Length: 88
Image (cartoon, rainbow, N blue to C red; front, side, top):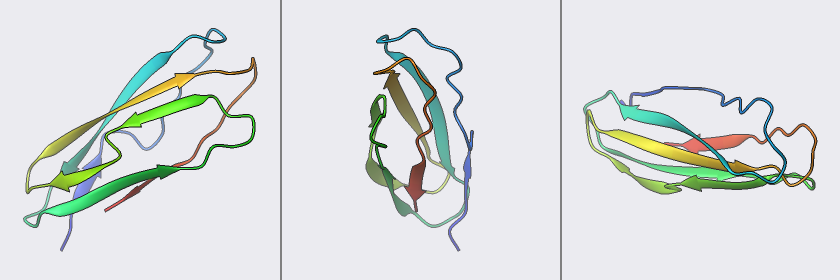
């Protein structure tokens, strides 16, 4: 059975300066005894900020942790919401 945990289920970047890059991180941990692959996907809404997430895919061995970096640069001075899907 695949078992994992996420350090965060949402990332709130709060109020940010227009056109300035901001970074946050989260961690995926393989808490089971079986290695598994993971992949990240997201859909940019039409008025989305510039968004970059690394890594987008990989493999996690048992007890291994993967740190993800998320960079956002608001393209327009407005509220944004982007759903990120992590598939294991």
